[in-house]
Length: 282
Image (cartoon, rainbow, N blue to C red; front, side, top):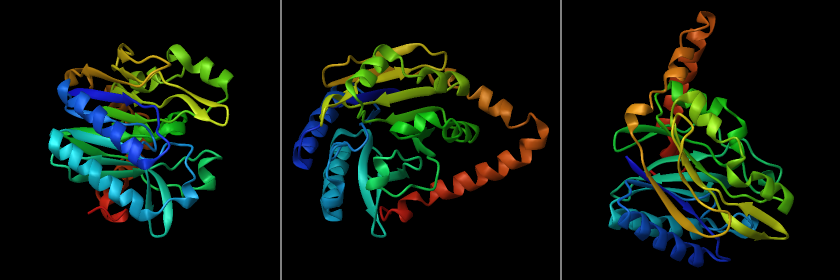
């Protein structure tokens, strides 16, 4: 599978971001990507006044993105706020090559800033792209390895991670050059890791480090963006290397945990299968 990660400079409006998303989709299509990942809250930017956001604005934006995926014949993964049941979620919506919603994951481990606007999700991502089992986390959730491990136990071979950095300049600088611990998630689960971040000044003296990357199961960086400009990086994934072997080993040893893992994976699959209905996308 050939995958792309989009490193974005957010526009101040939804219309502006949709224009940038469209341009990046076209670039990914020209680079023959099978799937393209956009950052967290790519429709709005992460510094948006989310309390003023109208549900119809996002639904309209998702229809535009659906058409982009259909026209490019590409699997598209989009970080976006999403309303459901009168609550707002920090979500990742997955579209297939026909532009149909395939899965919706809502960030469950929220930052202090998230909690001012968003409700935590209550699931773990699990979906298929062109028959390949995949999972996802959003931004801050890279600190919670169980979200990835359980999905890898359930068969996920690629992890998609949309991010939107919002750090003090010193923190942002410390993350540059790949010093963010991301590689270990790929290694400990023997899966691929696709990371799409925002980049540059985010307003209010905050920055995003960029460093979008695609990492192999052995921690090899197949593609790495810089810390300054918007870009679309692409890598070919040899899925024979995404064995998930360490996660699979954990299913059996220690033996006293085996039945508990199996029950959790069963529930994970059940909730993942109902994600579109839960967020009104089916």
